[in-house]
Image (cartoon, rainbow, N blue to C red):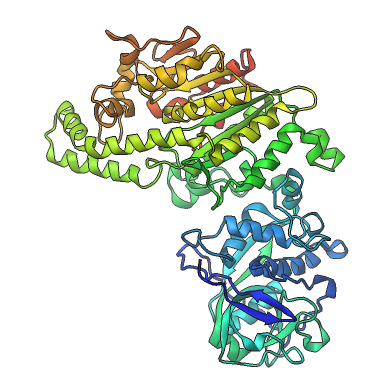
Length: 633
């Protein structure tokens, strides 16, 4: 990491590490309204609202808090709120759009996106500098997350760098957030006026809270000892000439109406379809972190995936484990404690290798209400694989190019596709298997996180939760690294539900079967009959993914795959454990009736049988999965 620029201002060294917002064609730009503008906008900011970031590189969080505070004063009147700079900055880092991880600071867009998706709690419940002056370990607790639903972002617009747009936006919104290349004249503005200097120090974010005939009035985060324009601490005049030379980014925003019960509702179900005219468009709306917080574990080759909207951090894992151990202790609100679900079960869910984090997030959002109303706490594993990135598109492109060389016979095309896919496919498959083995391997961050969550399920005051496991397709590979952790902790899965498992007979024999009857009490498997397997397709390949695996991707051509009927009923069938039962879609249709390999986790019959297996009872239409619960992903 390169050295972070600093400036010495108001007796302290300040980091100048805000990053510029990248060009994004999705940005909505502010359009000034035809309203009469005030000739001057002179703010009245009480000293309690002037913050000090000290030596932290968190100016985007502090700048955004200044803007939000002002709008809260208008929104809540006498019950004005002072919002948490810490939460705004922590969410900014998770939602940053700058490539890579080896940098400090964040972007304004990242701060706005973090606020939009998560809201913000109050400063009193998440202070950046508690009473001892040192930042505490951050965690988005249940209480903070729920409180954050009170104050959310309604809309935000990027500003063109036109002076009239800035003036109008300040008239409309009261304040805007901005960043600039700042110089040594910012160190100690005399009488609160920033003197133009040509010695530049770095980039910094702040709020623009007013203007007069000479320039913009800014609210900074260098404490009350800085500034003093018009006798107000923390405020300074930034000349229009200086603005024109050095401004980097600016955004106007407006808070949403405070409606905590509508926090999870951003769009109507058919919003995207009506907007684009495509029936499947609603699937493109990715859930916010708040929608699924506490119900996912994001890993990459055994490491916690610590960036982006769905980052997993040790502090976040600790907060979830604490909630699992004692839900009521995580919240001081007695009314909220009474609403908390009394769980009896916890289930770990691993998804297919082609499901990226957004696809998994959509499943979490769709399934969570069903599991929760049945007393089940779901924990989904997001895992980064070569298949759920752009490699999936590479393979499909390879298949399409191969088809262009072949004749019209499906069998001939498939044989040619298998031959061409084999060299790359085998390498990718080995990497996938290795990724599953590393996911919760000994000494990994994933293993430590899983151990902490499992411990939380067992440390409940009244009774430990019963544990279960669900996987789809290649998600079964993570089971091979989970089982040793279960053994180490002295725990067991009451049930294990495998939907079309895409693992070899050898992996089943050595990594899974020895634990069935001990660590795994019983296994239910859901597979396609061979006729449905052959009627399925993967892009231009005319059979199912499992056929592509056994014929082209697995280490040896013709490898037996656990999820295939031909591997379970052929001349030398895979020998299953006696506690392992298989149901076939196309034959056992009252239990499972998926038409395709990828369709098991959206098949109502299958999902309700899985649910009933966990609960040990039949599931009725009122409490089980409906078709509506299994759409939109």
